[in-house]
Image 1 (cartoon, rainbow over the protein chains, first blue to last red):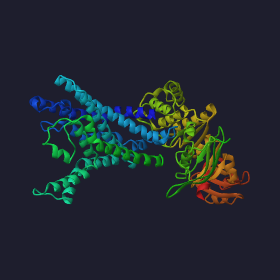
Image 2 (image 1 turned 45 degrees about the vertical axis):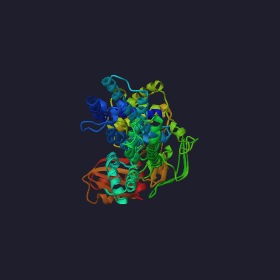
Image 3 (image 1 turned 90 degrees about the vertical axis):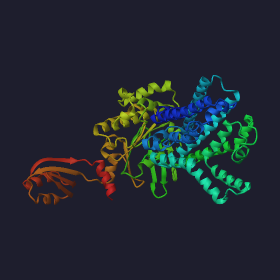
Amino acid sequence: MSAIFWKELADHFGSKRFIIFFALILIVAGGAVYLAGTGFAERPDATGPFVYLQLFTSSNGGLPSFLTFLSFFGPLIGVLLGFDAINGEFARGTVSRVLAQPIWRDSWINGKFLAGLAALGIVLSGIILIVVGLGIFALGFPPSGSELLRLLIFFAVGTVYLGFWLSLGILFSIVFRHAASSALASIAFWLVFTLLLFMAADLIANQVAPVSASSTAAAWAKNEQIRETVLRFSPVALFEEATSALLLPSYRGLGMVEILTRHQVPTNPLSIGQSMLIVWPQLVGLIGLTAVCFAISYVIFMRREIRST
Amino acid sequence: MAVVEAIGLRKAYRDAVAVDGLDISIEEREIYGLLGPNGSGKTTTILLLLGLTEPSSGTIRVLGRNPWREGLAVKRQIGYLPENVGFYDDLTARENLRFVARLNRIPDRESAPLIDDALGSVGLGEVADRPVRTYSRGMRQRLGIAEVLLKEPRLAILDEPTSGIDPEGATQILDLIVRMRNDRGMTVLLSSHLLHQVQRVCDRVGILHRGRLVAEGTLDQLSLSNDLERAIEIRARGLDPDGIEAIRAIEGVIDVEARGDWIRVRGNPPDGALARAVVESNGELIELRGATATLEDVYLRYFQE
């Protein structure tokens, strides 16, 4: 499997589309972080004890935060690495040639998935390190240990999130014969999860538990709860919830809890353990979605008839 | 021990039977040609032998093992050139082969001379460091053969090795196939629908039709077993209109076919009778030759029925 892993990794880093996308994300992320940084300079009082984490979460000057960018565009780069993983091999006529070599069939798809995951991990860690590096340069002091630890966990969660989109891309690359169809299907899913599901959640919540200005707190709570339940089918929502709790240590809880406690208690930061406790379900959900997606690909691929024509 | 042995091999897909009760046996150091029109089950047979697809019923032994159950052990000793072979276009020929060597767990240090040797044997030594994207179809096919040579397999399976290649390129490939057996002692199984090429290199031929082996043997055996009549070709000019009828009337003639100056006679006429008939019909006899039964005749016989 290592032969496949290294070849795929080399292919990813050598491919033009990967380089273009990497550059694009770097520019956008850099821009977002730079604007966030200049925002701190204008209002130094607004920064809390976790300046480095705020670099990733705060937005300024109309440009969304780094976190928003990652949750929105991250999927595209994940899908990009996966959408032609298998059907591309069929199109090139390399499938039967590779599978006639003494390798297990699953080591091929495992190698491809792991290589994609490694490429995504390298990209994400690169971006985070660049941001932190620029931060040290601009701010003049290094991040604290707990900030680094939170960033490390953020990196892990981000890789899992991108890994979900990678495995979705690979799944479509197995289901669809043509790379174009699988790319379109991946983008359709991306739109559903990033936009449509958020709209649908509001719609469903308002249908099932309508609220008005005169509604009781209980009715509002029910409405919000339904909205959250619908949203949690989306990996995008899971990722946003998980990472905001990780990068904003003052988060007391997610969803309703967050809304209710936002203006009440003094915003003392939670310990990392407590933050992890809050995001644990989201994290498990993300890992589960990725695993399910990959498992389906795996099963279909193992049963696939290998015919060159 | 036979290198390949299949008994009652059958592969049914949901809506069609691709291989239907195939019995085949290939001996060590033999070049065996699997012949048949498109869709006759050649490729499916090959996939079954490679263990890339599971047989519905029947038994297969390749090099004494079951390819589906012991896939890795079998694949280690088989070289396979698929139909329409594809490579990673952005990699060079050498890099493509190095990847295959790694898949075979040959360390780079050991594979480097093997790769040079294989590329040299197929005449790609000078373009080894060009990306495969720039290769012609014939060069890709030869690169596929280099990949087979690299593995030093006991059995080489080549699916349509010469299809879509110009005659000169096809000749080169056929020469390579013969050398695989003569110089490296490999057993070769090749499939094709191009008869004259199979005829040139194969020791034994099996004819597949609708998933069944309808005939098998050396070319001589195939012709004899079918009672293929002798065919004689006559080239004559200025023959009387009833000249053709005169030839047809000769004892032993089964069929006469005229096209321009050429007349093709099937049957077994007495010596000299044809020439005499042409001359007596005021024909100018230019050429008269016996046509040996080609595989084409054998082939047409099976598929016209």
